Every structure is written in structure tokens, then in C-alpha cells.
Length: 556
Image 1 (cartoon, one colour):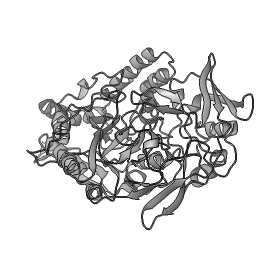
Image 2 (cartoon, one colour):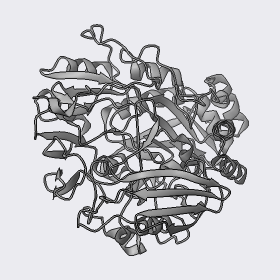
Image 3 (tube, one colour):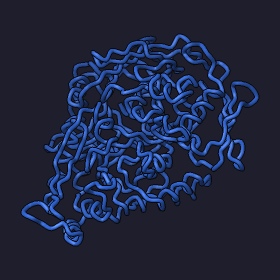
Image 4 (tube, helix red, strand yellow):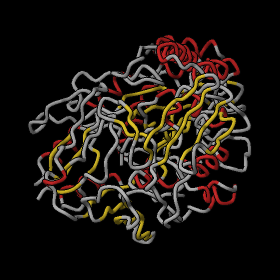
């Protein structure tokens, strides 16, 4: 699943990136596209009147959710967002160009009503109710803002999302209006409350951490969860009988946990309606399947190698991280990954903005590919060759690279392994099942290098505090455990800037610092290539857009 969400970025053990190592001379007529973010998408748009009433949309998940609370550190993942999107409220929706508008199913109006102090007024749709029939009110917003503020560390939040800057949430003209007042400006306030959870979920740390562990106690979308079968690795959504908006065309949505290798066969055997395809061989095979089409729209998702720079870690020294980064041929990796799928593949050269987004510029000079310079730096740092592997103070320069258990990720790692071997660095490859990659390995810091993807949004600045700010007492978002007070201060200044152009300039200064500290090695952004059932409408390659689940369905 790769449905974009409007809030801050979320870490995803993504099955959609990697390499197909073997060549494919005949690509079956597949025309390479671009991976540069644009202003269009490919979803087979149709008026709902052209769709039949009913039908089951079959989608795939990487792993079974640890929790259905997307706000929780165990829940801020793509799979949880995929289930939440048809079932939980968000204030805004995005079009293909990334332009945001209020989702009137949930809010009649959301506007910035003051800048000194910053205030945002949320007016809730008077028809909006939770699935137990209770109204959605200002108290739900107040409770969530408090839970995500970071002021009580018993709430295991995946991100504070700017709520650490919220001074208070007050009742407006009635219970259906909330006035949010900030004690410091927050540039990306439109990303807040997406998703909104009921006050019962956010009222106490115990409820926040555990209430939605095994399902959504209460929801408020066009669909509700009606079946969770962990034995069959299946989640079924059905129409919400309390839904007040347009009646969905679909009767149900079924999520099944499928290994990446099972997705192409599932598309070919008419067991899935939609799946991401990477590598020219997979794209070609899907395209040649009966009743399947390929839909494309570049999207803000990107793969990378993230280093573990925690105190005492082998890669604690930023100079060592830079040296290793310079030994990695990013262009070679990207060319291999996207050959035949993307026209003229290029590495991603910014940690904040995607190519095609306003603000994108190349800040990657600190890790420019130069294996000779990498070897020289390693010598200078005291890592001397002893046979094939460098050593220092009796310690070998031997790194453990962890990733989702998938051939495509492994093939990426094998190329990196070859690159690093040339400068005397040994790379050991360790694969982990999707369910355990973050909880058991990355979040506890049990790695030297981690391969995964960040799924982005139309509000890219939210990534700065979530991913790159460093707080040794709260490392839930900063997977690398790398940062500095100077970068923290610049991040603070950036997300406080309400002038969009100035915020972009500051964000690029942050990005330059992130490159200079050797935080990670960005590889490529996703091409957004999907295999889709040919009679499925209003669903496919969304690009920057959000899905309208009331309009998704199958042609008559």
C-alpha cells in the first residue's frame, strides 16, 4: 500500500523500491516515465454514476498493524495509514498538484484566523459523528493536541506534529468549533489533526497506547472495520452505517498481508486489484496480465540508507559516515533500480523536498561519489587496511545492514556491499520480516545501516522535526540518533516561519547540515508505478492527491 497522507512523513518498510538486477532487453512496450513530482495523476477518473453499486476492493499490506492508532510510535507506518484513510477524519484533502482544500465531510471550514498569536479555527461539520453515534466535537481536538504535545512522555507518540507549540484549544461558538492557539508559530499547521482520533483514545496514556491496539474502538469515515483476522492476515472494511456523507460505491475493502514476491502473482491471478510494481520485469509482467493496466504518477516516497550514529555506535563519527557515503555509487544504484521504468533516472539530492516540488535543490555535494577520496579519508581517520577489511584499535570496519525481507532490497544492499568492499569496508546483509523491522530492529537501534523508505507529503517541512531533530530522551522519530543543537535551532526557526518562501530557504539550510553530518544516503524517489485492475475507477497512481473513498469503485 502506498496511499499518500497529508501529515508528517511516516517510516515505511516499503516493498516498492529496490532493484531488478537482471537485464530485460524487451520490455513488452513499457514506456519509461519520470520520477519527478508533477501536477497530474493517473486514477481512471469517472463520475460515480458510471460505477456499479457494490464490489470489494482488494489491497495488500506489508505487515499486520501493531496498532491501529496512527499517532502512536508503533502505528506511524504506511500500513496503518492505509487502513485509517477510509475510516478516520482529516481536515484537508489534496489534489494532484498538491493543493489543499478543506474536507467538507468533516469540517465546514478550517482557517488561519490570526497570526499574532497564531490561531486556527476548525468548524466541524454538524453532521459528523463517530461510529458509535456520538458527535465529533472540539473536545476531540483538544484531547489530541494535549496527547501529541510531548509534555507527557507516557504518550508514546510517533510525532508531535507541531502540537508542542499549541498553547490551548478552546471551544468556539459551540461544541462544533475549536480554536487552536499557538505559543509559537507553526508553518505546517494544515498537517495537524490528520488523522483525528476520538477523545476517548487520547484522554490518557493508557488509552492512547493500548485502546486501538487490536482494532479501531471508534472511527468516523465512509468505512468501518468489520473483521480482523490475524490468523488469515486479513482486515475487512465495510460501509459505515453512521456515515453522513455520499454513500460509497464499494461495499467493502479487504486488506491482506502479502509478501512482496506474492503480489505480482496475486495481480496476475485476479486476487488483488492494486499493487505497486518496481523493476522493469515486474512492470512488464503486470502490464501483460489479463484485465490489468499500469498507472503512473510520481509520488513523494524515497528510498535511502540511514546510518546509526548513536553514542558508542561504530558509525558515531560523522567523518566516518561521510567517508563511507562517498564510496557508494548512488547513480549506479538508481540506474539499476529504475532502468526501463524511469527515463534518465537520477539520485535524490535533498532530504526535505522531492524533485519537482517547489524548494528542491541539490545539496548532496558532501557525499559526492569519490571512492579514492573515501579511502583517503578512512586512512586519515585511522581505519587501516588489514587484508580486505579495515581495522582501528582492534575493531574491524564491519557493518550490519538491515532491511525488509525482500529480494529487491537485498539486491540493493549487494551493490552497496560491492561498493564498500573496494575501500575495505565489509557489509553484512540482514533481512527482517516486515512486522519486526521497525519495532524490533530499527527503533531499538539494533543496526549500523538501515534500508527503508520515507513516505512523504505535500507538507514536507513536517519531516524536519519528526526525522532530523535530535533529542536523546526521545528518539522515536530520529531513527539515526544523529543531530546537533545547531540543527535543532535551525529546524525550530524553519517551522516557525509563516512566509513560505523564507521557510523553503531555511529548510534548504537545514538540508545542507543534514548532508554534512552524514545522516543518510538518499537513493531514488518512487516512480509511482502501479498495476491496477482495468475496471477500477478513481483509484490508482495518486501522486500528491488523496483518495476519495466514496467515489472509488468498479465500472458498470
